[in-house]
Image (cartoon, rainbow over all chains, first blue to last red; front, side, top):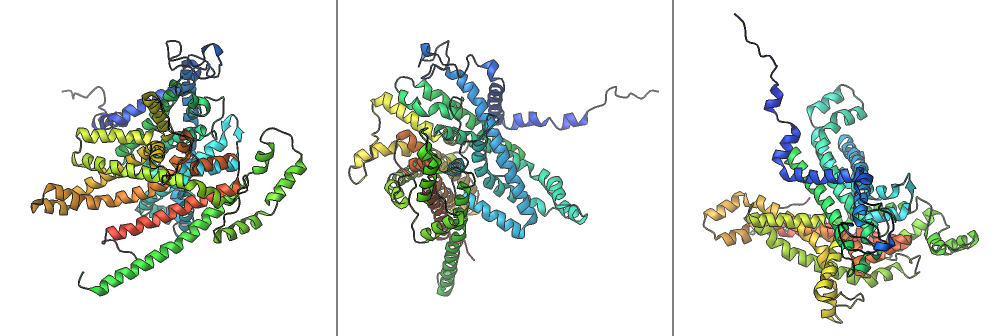
Length: 299
Length: 331
């Protein structure tokens, strides 16, 4: 008598729990669509030199202000530069600055938020007063104050001051939310256990508390990429962000673009669509991520 | 409760104590803002004198620069400068602009009228659209109205107000071959000219505001509609219209008031960029100018004004809450 053994082991996990990504697509179709937009943007940003039909900086006086055509899908600007290529390179600028500043701001904010909740008492008080002060400014106003302070310093071709200018206003907003989340983690028995076991503060903060506030952190990170892209575009539009001749969406709308409302409306239409689409995608993705990871959590 | 005057008096007293407390708490926040802005602007070397004298690429001797610095008082120790500024502020004197050398107060006052009018118009437009929009979306949840609202509000959160402003200009130009005038006419001089000029920037900055408010109204109304007292009202046969206006909306608008109040301060952020599009010489334009000129005193003055405004609105919202919702107690 033989016992029929299954030749291949059954993967119980696979059948019971579908993959997290698939589950996300099923539950949040809009989030999946927005991720596709983000992915296309990232692709265009990383492979700008392969994807774009022209050099974004190449001046071509033969085709100044030409309307969208097969040669120039989105037309050309006042210097004959191909707008489509500039949009593609612009996505690199937007993503680099948007992601770095949101990452820096959210991470610093999360650390402050956890520390505030963990230590409580006087440290919590000091951090919260500091947060109150920073929250008294609209994001763009605080960013402008930072720009005024740091001037224009570039490090390795990246506008460090611009990244700081956008990251600093993000810090207090993230601190608030992460602190609230961390407060509920702090009273968990495992944190008490860790403290009773004599672990150091930094170990408890980074190994025990931080992993449990990852959900709000990720949600804030994504949501603030949208805000950061918007802030970068606004600052560049005001002439206080990315400088010419770098391709940046906000910059494409500033300066003489407004002189050509009549002659070349495409100069105004396409960069604005790019900014809106990017901000829209990150906003929507952040929302879906929130609903997926933690339905009770509200930013 | 109505029959016990002592209790009402008690509430009034705690309310008064709470108000005084809150007003006193504003002072440390504002001092914090002052310290932060003052020293933050001066962390990195570089000031207005360089922009002023070397801005056009001309060669200016170091001695001239030092002289100008001395004249503006920038050579003195930071603490002295800070102390002087704080003392001035206590008497509502914000100093002089380092660029135009006119008093900061005067510079701001000259442009406040325009920006304030745009901000108020934007608020009125936003609230007038947001209340019906948010209410309808909540009442007909998951219907086409709700989806339409979602699209409209997500657009409001994603479309930058300055681009919307440019689109409005583009639309006006192609439809009427007309652009709003650049020179500002006060409303008491010529209301028609004033409104045809300022309605467009108000629309551009109001859109985002409307989106935020409508979302807030929808979600808080949905929450309220699940409450027991709504079911009770319906069960006892109150007309549906009355249930919505008297019972639901009245309670749902409370959280919306907070958002509307706080967002009002944040309109200034939208104005900073949008005034540039419409070439309006308001607070936002002044702020951008003073930042690009490194005009420290003017930047400081405006930041203090914005922060003070924010703190006041915050307080007003909290107090309004108590007036609208007697259930809230303060201690």
